[in-house]
Image (cartoon, rainbow, N blue to C red):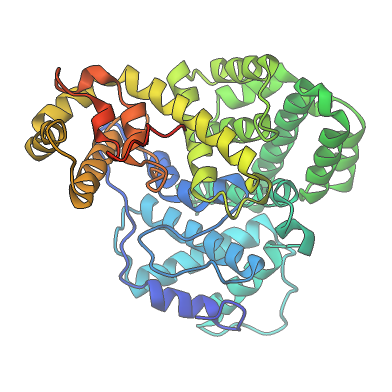
Length: 430
């Protein structure tokens, strides 16, 4: 498949045909959480769509940035449609219905995205029409690919399309262009308010903050008048109004806003006490408890750590080390809270227990260590704080796991240092 060629959308649907959407509904799972879990690893939530969901075996790494963004945005909308309809394995008919629904949604959200045609459309025009709309919707400038923050502040709004499409699917027959556009404006205005609040807190970098703030406002689809208001006064930085808006928002929108705040706060890798206080205040407004904060921060950091080579501002060794240390500390804190649950899971896993005890007598083979590693990661995945996320597998080596996990979850005679390579290596620093 070549996403730069005409007809890519139909070819993509053919390639992903019969590929299931990965979601499992439990008693405490909402549709919004399923959408988050499926899409968070792609990066579309953070304005950096890097790869398709893991179940779709199509590599996007060699694709041009614009085309990659289009395909991942399209898959995000298809997945949202299928999860709402509770369809795990979409048929051709379902995919065609989804394309038709996405087309109608974009006609409402961006009625002027494509010029009006004089003649009627044929039965296959939905595919080509949506292809053109996605091409118009996604805009990329060359320098954005080399500067994370410029790309972030523009492409951050792609996930707004997903949120609005979810709202559209709740009542497609009664939705109107005016109502969807009003929702879009409300979300963008409040993102501006959120960014203004974050940037005011980080006053030491005022010039850079102002630059990014202005860049983001210009990348919105707000009217010229609304952009002028946002640029010239503090109307959109009213904390009380922002708090009231988010308090009454759906879970997915709350999660989206909070993780954007997290990403913005630690972007300079120097998180100040005032910025932590800001996140705590925002969490309180959202009725998030301290562990919700940890989970969202972990989500952002795990995504960036998984893709640090594609996130340009993190490619220095020092930046990478700062992030890995911070993430190790955060995972340690979360693991300690759920220590009793982890201990119970380990004790019930006979093979894992056998290998842990065996490691105290002799060095484990590479295959045995890998079994320990993968089974410990599976146990971590059962913890509520991690269940929504794709774990950074390459980062979670045996030494890192031995550092993250509390000692009291292991057998009483267990020494985690013996799990490290016997050639004298110490447990790795995070």
